[in-house]
Image (cartoon, rainbow, N blue to C red; front, side, top):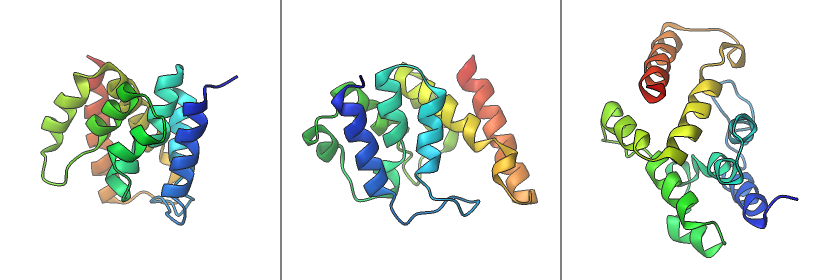
Amino acid sequence: MLPDYIKIAHEIAKKAHAGQVDKAGMDYIKHPEAVASFVNTNEEKATAYLHDVLEDTEITANDLLSAGIPHNVVEAVQVLTKEKYTPYFEYLCRVKENSLARTVKLADLKHNSDRSRLARITDKDLKRLEKYRKAIQYLGE
């Protein structure tokens, strides 16, 4: 049986991402669900469900803590939340220092690199995929 906090994390993500779509036009919640399917531990799964919640919604870290999400999961979600003006490499350095965030980010990049999610691939997509490839290489070191 899954711990309650995983179910809570999934419910928070479903509500937070309701009405959002990804680059392929699919319901956005499918992305965190896919990322969660790539990881193993309960903490990794909860982090995966929530990894975009702070960045893309009005939900705060305190909201997550109040809902019963463990502190280390909330901390990893905060690390995974890229601030708009933070350079990407600086962001990746921060992610690499938190093992929970690093594991989930690698799963996130794996899903984001899946070309089959896109109906057609543009030059912009190719540049983004190359950025993801380099990030996977860096985080995997």
